[in-house]
Image 1 (tube, rainbow, N blue to C red):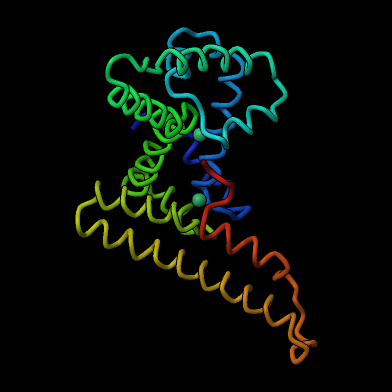
Image 2: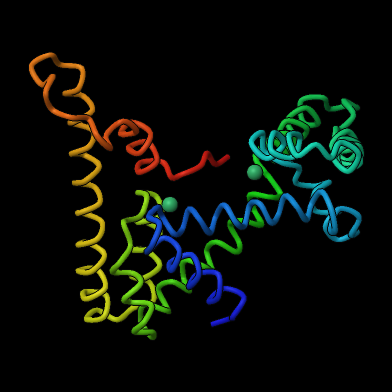
Length: 232
Ligand SMILES: [Zn+2]
Ligand SMILES: [Zn+2]
């Protein structure tokens, strides 16, 4: 397994074992920050990257993040050539406007469905999830880190289980699933308990029950269900 993945995966699991939070969300956020920094900096003028950004463009979420990064000139240059390429892809009506219109619709819809940053994140993130499964199989120390996790968000728990199922033999997977189940079910019960306490805090009959750490129960529940930061 390549070191470019084992090092960050180990570090994220180490950090979240201490601070809590989903280690895969941490990794995904790092990948995103890294891609945004590269695209508005070092790789912006690279012909190969520019060819891809011209073709794929970006999703609304990543445009927003790039816009708020405050580097308007690199962003304007990226937009200028992207918009030109999209403009060039419009088919002239010609003799068969029904066909050229349909072809234009298809091309435009491909552009609006694709995002260079999302595709880069997905490429690396899939390998990181697979690395986390590989490390669990081969590294005793990583298993310990895994056991100490607070839990995973639901989409990432699903991805981790799927990646592990694809690479592990039956007996190993059974052991892996047992451990992940313990971590994840405890995590979900904890959040669910917090949420009930939050709801009760609006009920005068529970006026004496302290709300304590349940103040952020709604945010924590949404994070559990959707991941810790908004994607796409
Ligand atoms: Zn997550
Ligand atoms: Zn995107």
